[in-house]
Every structure is written in C-alpha cells, then in structure tokens.
Length: 124
Image 1 (cartoon, one colour):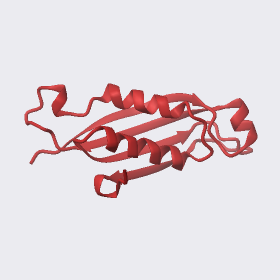
Image 2: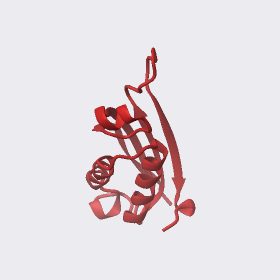
Image 3: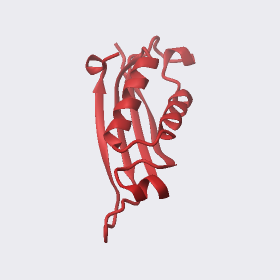
Image 4: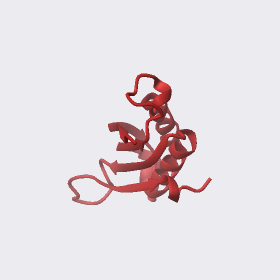
C-alpha cells in the first residue's frame, strides 16, 4: 500500500504564548513545520478526497495559534490531535513549533518543541 505525506513549512504566526507575563503582553513570532503522513484513499492521487487538504490543515493551525497558551508542548499536542481527529486518512503528525525571539537575556537563535503523534497514540 502506498504512503504519502503533506508538508506545511515555515508557517509564521504572531501570538501571545508563553509562561512569562511579558510574553503574554508583548507576544512573539512563531514558526511551525508540520508533516502529516497518510495512506492515500486511491493511488495515483487525483482527487482532493484521496489526500489531506493542506489548506484545511493551515486553517486549523491558524485557529489554534490564536488561543494564548503557556506551553508550546500543549499547542503542539492540540494541533496534532485535532489533525488526527479531522482527517481519517492521517497516520501520523510530526509538528515543530519554534519561538523566534525568546525572552532570554543575551540569547541568539530560536527555541522550540517537536512532537510526533501516531494514530495509535491518539486519544479522542
């Protein structure tokens, strides 16, 4: 059986996630990468119903990023679980979320979390 995946790369959002008050007030920029693995309903793939609609995945991510949350791990888990819930073809979700300007003195770079959730790990 054929396997495939869709990728949403370097999605950018400004949001108010974080543990610290300044993050909740000033906000930060986040970059998200997502891979959704799936087993195509038909092969070759010629209809949108045979794949994962990346535009719908983007809208799901955009909506979740609007909800301020202290931990990136929580956001990643929520997004992965929602993708698995909404897209029955999906086998796994691999997501990484990076905070591009963390409020750490003299810190240069970004920090973030990665999570891979397999359908068998998913709980409704």
